Structure formats: C-alpha cells, structure tokens
Length: 177
Image (cartoon, rainbow, N blue to C red; front, side):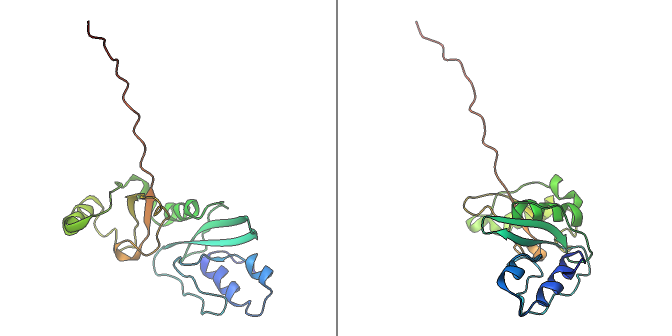
C-alpha cells in the first residue's frame, strides 16, 4: 500500500495493481471514472498538470458506501472524505480556483441565442478564467445536476447549482362587501 498522496500518486499506485484481486482494487484510492486523469488499472498513469487542476479520487468501502475526495492533478493536495462526488469536486475547486463560489450562476444557453449567451458569460467571468481551466457555474436542470468534467470552455468543470425555490408571496385577500 502506497502512502503517497495526491491524485497522480494514487493513480500511479492503482495502475501498478495490474493482477490484484477485485476487492483490493475497489479499496484503493484512484481517480474517479470520467474525471480528469482517469485511467483503468491497465492504463498509463497521467502526468502531473502544469497548473492546479481539479479532479476527484474515490475508494469503495462497500457496495453502498463509496468515499470521495477532491484532489489536484498538479500537487499532492487531497480534500476530506466525502460521501458524494460533487462535494469532493467542490473541495477541489476551493483548492484550484478559490474564488469560484463568488462567480455568477448562469442559466443554460438555449436555441439561437447561444452565441450571445457565451459573450455574456465571458463578460461576467474574470479574464483568462476559462483558459486556466476554471469552472463554469450553471443552474441545475434535473436529471442533469451532476458536475460535468471537461464540459466548460477550456476543459474545466461545469458546476451545477440547484436553483433555490422562491417562497410563495404571502398576500392578504380582502373580502369585497
């Protein structure tokens, strides 16, 4: 068992377990399927990123209990254990792009207005944000509410946020006499 931390070190250890038992593989920290840096145990481990890049690592405790951690592809940083992947991805973005939570949450583009929508998004986000792999915050549209790796411009995550339900306004109904 390797004591090295960080997404790259964990994935390198995972790919070294080519003939390991299934339960050993399940209990080993590795980059989550579909997240940046993912390879199977038979693949080539990823190389470290040039800049801090968010990903997640996971390990399976039981079929009903998976643990996730946010991690960085450029350094050994790992976040705390989380029960849900999206919380771990958000931890990773707190490390890689600390100001992401203050950015505006946008609605998805629709139809013919997509080009104008992108201009609006780029005007509201910091200069060079997407070039640095920064995330795009969108309101969630169930069932598409899972954070999406590589879906933002520049290859960053789309971080979905559930739209807060507005409270019904309380009005007093006056009786007509």
